[in-house]
Amino acid sequence: MRSFLLGAFLAVVFQAPAWAGSVAGTGGSTEITQLMNNGQLAASVGKQAQQVANQIRQITLQIEQQKLLIQDLKSLPVAAAAIALKPLEKDLRVYKDLYKAVKDVQDASKEASDMLKQRDAERTNMKLTPRQYLEQEIALAKRREGLYGREFDRDLSRLTTFNEKSKALADATQNATKAKGTVEGLAALATQNAIAGSAMLDLAQVVTEQKAALALKSGK
Image (cartoon, rainbow, N blue to C red):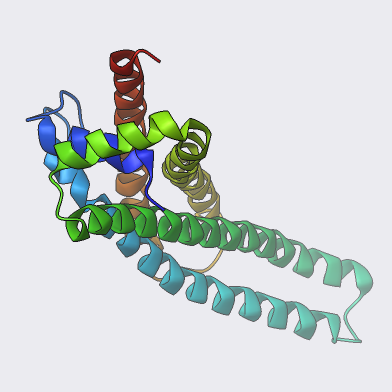
């Protein structure tokens, strides 16, 4: 289904020569056309998140095995067992929270990546210029405002959700530094996640502003 978001998105990407502000924390004035790379950027985060999730699962399994070994020591006093288990249980909670945050980012990155790639591919397959596509979307939106309005909101939500999950992962990553063990690839994921989350938020803001501008222009 065509989305009103793509019309607004393409109008911003192709018709604006530059956008004052920063994309992905690069600082300064960034060419708006770089936002076309957001689909690939989100996809790369998803791939890295999958690798990290596998690493976390291995660590949590090791912690659970250590817990079982301690619990199976019949000769170990209850008080001593409790002392030995406490840091393991704490680390286990940290890694479980981290795992959830990583998986959430992985899911959100796929949603955002698929949406951006699909919208751009659709415009290309229709062999329309961004301006032609935008005019067509506006016309369709006027005739079927509710349907296309909801589709726009869903697309925009995918971008904002990615940013929200990115922030949650940043917090979980910070907490993970206090736990024992090293998650291979976590540092790389944290960097990619910060860049992608910022880029998605920037894009969401641009699209929102463009939506308002188009509504004003059309008298709605």
